[in-house]
Length: 558
Picture (cartoon, rainbow, N blue to C red):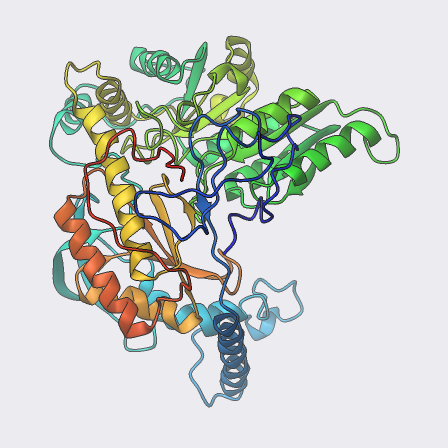
C-alpha cells in the first residue's frame, strides 16, 4: 500500500524548508490495533517539528486484478451502450432521452448526444442509488419514501410505503445538530415566530439584522480571528469570494482534488490557475519556486499575488490537509493561503475549531479561513474569517455580500445556538461530549472496517470514510443491498471519482450510538462478503476495544 498520493516514497523530504528528523526516515507506527508496518506516520521526527502528533493516512493501491476487471466492466458497458443507442436510433428500443425536434436541426444543438452517453447508458442503470427522497430529520436515522421504476430508472413511482428508521451513514451531520428537538430546534422555532422565514433584502440595504452581526462576532471568536462574515450559501462563499480576492495577473495554486466551488471561484477570478498533486508538498513547492523564478508568462513580470487553495478535509478522499507544511511553504515563498474548512470545522480539533486547532497552529497564519454552517452546525450558509481589513474589503467587493439575500433568521439562530453549545457558552458540556463522541466513533468505525479486510482511504481521524468498490456493477448493488437491510449509504462513481476508484462514502456522526455502528458494520461485512468487496491485501490484527482518550493517537515505539 502507499501512504498517500502526496508522499509515496519513504524518504522524508525537506520540501518545507527544514531538515528531516534524527534518522531522516519516516518511522513505522504501531497503532493500538497494530498494522503490520505498512502505515506511515509524519510527526515530530519527520518534517522538523512541524507535526506535534502522528499523522496517518492510507491509500492502499488498487489490486491489479481488480483494476483489470474494472476496466473490462466499463468496456463491456460501453459496448452495450453503443448497441442500445443503435437500437434507439432505429426505433427498436424506446428512446427516453431528450432529442432535438426535426425543425430545429439547423440550430445549434441544445443536447450533446455523445456527452450524455455516460448518463444514458451507465448512470441511468443505477440512478435509483441517488436522489432518494427522505421524509424526516436527517439524524442518526431517517425515514425513506419508497419508490420503484418500471423502465430501468428513467422514471420513478412512489409505492406509498415509508421505510422507517434507516441508519444514516450518508449525511454530513458530524456533531448531530441536524435534529428537531433540543435547544437548537427551539431557538430556530422561536426565531421563525418572531422574525419570519425570509429577510427579503440584502445586507447592504435593509436586510442587516442585529442577529447577523452577533453571528459574525461569535464566529470570529470561535475561529480566533479578528473578524468574520456570514453568507447564505456555502457553495457561493467560495465561488463568489475568490474572484474578489484574485484577478488578472494573479496566480492560484489549487489542489487537484479541491471542491467544485473552489474550482469555479478560481476560474471566475480570471487568474492563472496551476494545479498541484493532492496533498503533495513537493509538487506545491515546485510550482511556488517556478512562479517566483519565472513570473508571468511572456512578460515574466512578478505575479501580483499567489494564492494557495486547499481544503481541511477532502470529502471524497477522507484525507486531511498537511497544513503545517503548507503554512511553512506559504511563509517561505510569501504566498497567501485560502483554507476551506467546510468538512473540518466542528469535526476536528479538541474543541471543534477545525484543522488549525487539530495541528495546534495559529489562526493568524491562515490568511483566509472559509467554512460552512451546513455540516457540523446542522444549518445552511458559509463564512469567511480573517483580519478585519480583509472582511471590510469583502463587504464592499464580494458579489455574495452585495447582491445575495440575507441569511434567514431561523438559520442564524440554529447556527448561534449550536456554536455556543460547541464553545460551552450554554453552560453545558454537550458540545464537548459530542466532539469527543465523534472522535471515538471515527476511530472505531475505521478500525473495524480495516479489520474486516476492506480498502479504506483517508486519515485515521477523518469522519469521512471512503470504502472502495471499484467495479461499476457494484456501485448500485452495494447501495441497494445496504438499503434492503435498512442502512442508508452514499455511493460514488465516475466522473466524481477516477474511473477505477468507485466507492461508498460513509459519514460518521456523534449522533451514532455504538449499537448503531455495530449493526451497520455487521451489515457492511455481510454485503461485503456477498459482493466480494474485501479487497485489502494488508493483514490487520483485531484488537480489544478500549475507551477513547487523548492517548489514542499517541505513537508507541518498539
